[in-house]
Structure formats: structure tokens, C-alpha cells
Length: 263
Ligand code: T3D
Image (cartoon, rainbow, N blue to C red; front, side, top):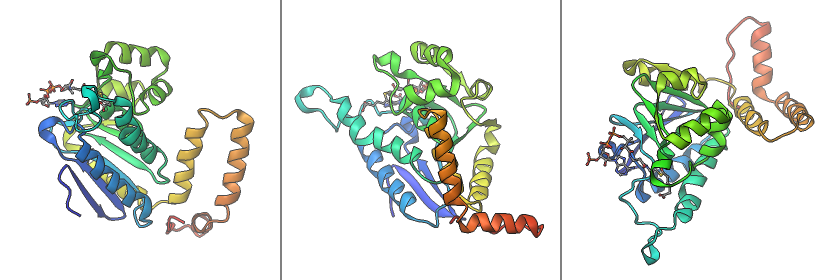
């Protein structure tokens, strides 16, 4: 499929979605939202895709909303940002966090506004050493959106989340790693190779189990301990009947590499 604002390809069992508006630091227009939505639908529906890698072209990862694109919700001259969020940003975050497969984000440069929130909604965030994260919303009178107020304090704690969101200062990738905001920071030249290596690894793993790990960890944020223990029990019961569990145990006992099908 030909896209204008993104690149999308499927190879070696994983899909790569590359934001491709580098001259605007890959900020989101309505057109880009529509294209990302189509790509995400494919990732959800195609069982041969066992991991999603999100990255971007150029010197930035994503600067959030394109502030010059108000094609959406301009009725009466005042933009309805709620409409934009309801129609595009919230479904995108739900689509990423609800995807029952690992999502890797390779942050190649600055991630600002919803761009930072999108990165933080992914499961494994790798960032180039020169990249940075900015909660830029406070500079234009807004609040962190796209799950930012949910994911940020959970990742770094309330004190750091408040500092980042109220001051809008640039957080360099190395500090983001130190603070536990992201999984790992790598040299710029290694970013795409490392991200693809990881995606290819996930594409050979027990996808259903990985999807449930992601779901349970997310739900632990709002569950009580008894609720979480119940969820773990029911999930193990379900996964214990899967092909990949049988294969994993058989491979261990036979001292060979497992051949997972993702089922
Ligand atoms: O629908 C809704 O509005 C609701 C949802 C909101 C979600 C949000 O994301 S709100 C937050 C929107 N984003 C921003 O406020 C970020 C604005 N950008 C910046 O603050 C800076 O560009 C950065 C800190 C991200 C990077 O700074 P720097 O110095 O590295 O780059 P730059 O020179 O500012 O940007 C390069 C070009 O990209 C520049 O264009 P030019 O001068 O070369 O023609 C700049 O205007 C353009 N650009 C960067 N960000 C945006 C953008 N153009 C449109 N929208 C942007 N968000």
C-alpha cells in the first residue's frame, strides 16, 4: 500500500511503521493519523506479524500535533482539541497498548508532546543517545495527553513527572534511561540495527504469552493484589494449553532451541 506520510513494511515476522514527515519533525497531521490508523489495523489483524517497530525518518522522532494543521475541528474558528484527541490520539494509544504483541519504539531524535506520549505507550523504548523527550504541552497551555498523565508518573514517579510536565525541559535520552523512562539508550549509529535485531527476536518468541505479559503488567497499575493473583492464575491456565508452552517445555527437556508459532 502506498502511503504519503508514513512508510510501512512487513519483513521477517515483524512490521515497521516509520513516521515520514521529517521536515516537520514527523508531527501529526490528519492525513498521517489516517495512514497510521490503516497500518495499525493491519498489524492487529495479520497474525504473521509478531512484533511492531515504530520509528521515524530524519532528525526528530515526532513533535506531536502539527500545530499548523487544523484541518480537523475548526468549526467556528476555535479548534475542538477534544475531538482531535477522541478521534485520533486516544484510539492510537489504545491501539498500541492494547496490541497483543510487543511494540518497540526506536526514538531517533526529539520526541515532544504527543510524540513523547506515543513513545511511552510502547513496550520497549530504545533511544538514540542524541534523542530527547520533552513534555512540551505546558508551553502552549495544554496538559500531557495521549496517555502522558497515565504513563509518565507510573514510569518515573510523581515528583519527576511533575517536574517534566510543569517545566517542559528537555530530558536527554541517557537521563531518560537512568530514570527508568525508557528501556535503553544506544549510540545513534546502532539504533536501527538494535531495534530491528530486537524485533526479529520477538518475531520468533511465544507471541501470545508476550501479549499477556504486557496486558497483565498494564492491568497491575489499577488492580488490587487479589485481582492480580486471580488474573495470573487464569492466564497461566489459558497459556498452559497453548502450543508454545508445550513447545517451550519440550525444547527445554530435549535441550534444543524452541520453535514457537506464536500460538
Ligand atoms: O489536536 C490537538 O492539537 C490536540 C493534541 C495535541 C497533542 C500535542 O502533541 S500538543 C504539542 C504539539 N507540539 C509542540 O508544541 C511541539 C512544537 N515543536 C517544538 O517545540 C520544537 O520544534 C521541538 C522542541 C520539538 C524541536 O525543536 P528544534 O529546535 O529541534 O526544531 P525546530 O526548528 O523547532 O523545528 C524544525 C521544523 O519543524 C520547524 O520548521 P521550519 O522553521 O524549519 O520551517 C518547525 O516549525 C517544525 N515543527 C516542529 N514541531 C512542529 C513543527 N511544525 C508544526 N507542528 C509542530 N508540532
